[in-house]
Length: 97
Image 1: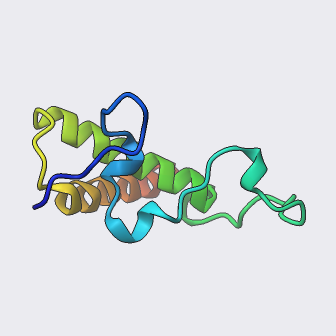
Image 2: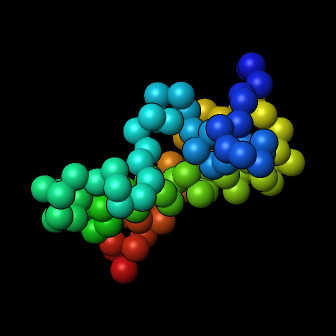
Image 3: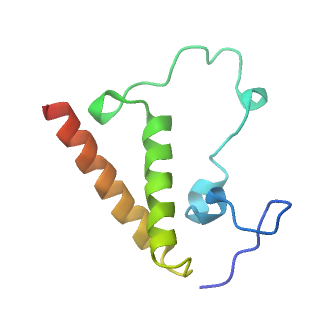
């Protein structure tokens, strides 16, 4: 897989750089990117949490897998899918309790 260029000032890859290419542009940061008419929270997904929180949980879990592997590139999709399965499992277990 081709080496990704960093989009931040430090030259190090940020967690957003590790997302699958189709999801990179979907992330927004800061209150200035949020439209005023979006004042109500996003709808809850499985486990009673909103999609934004679920996505963040998956992203953090995928980054932990990447770090555990020693920051070896080329396994982004596998990390994401494994992290997604782990989070879904955790949310499923939480809703049963």
